[in-house]
Length: 240
Image (tube, rainbow, N blue to C red; front, top):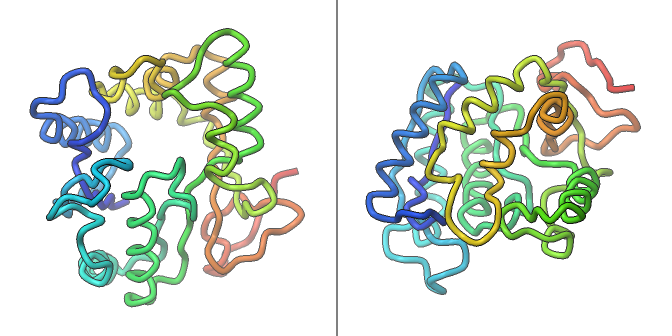
């Protein structure tokens, strides 16, 4: 697995902003090691900021032409002879403009490199909203998010093509989350990374034990596929 990273997230929310970008790169490297990532490619663009400043800073991801970004991503796809590329969903997850630019450039890169499968990593919005409402009843609002703010985030249940059971790897996922220490503080609410990293079993298996994807160009079926490479001609298994 190869991970391409567009920015270091230096404009992100954190308790200590000084040197944030370099700290986050070090955290990324530790998390990737825990997850067994073979290679990290740092594209080195600046963090555009979630919504501020209004105009993306010079050198930031959103200030860079999509074709330029796509060309660099396509070069990696061709070098790796990649069978699949994972991007953000069409809402950029929770709407960060850099996430949206990553999706746009990724789709263009996959077309250029003729990568056969493109999967948008997402969350089942209905499941997420159920969990958010439960947390709010006990006074927890992860990352300042509310059901209203998430009403148009991630993916509607009926658009999801794949649901993958990753319960055997929940412990590794939580260890990787803990590696991102700079994303556990800052702001007035409980940070999502901090909350997920500390979930006890069996709650952690319930919350982190499934991963969802929307395959670009694939029509959702009555039952979601569990084989991410089904479109490459492998046998398809389905969630009951």
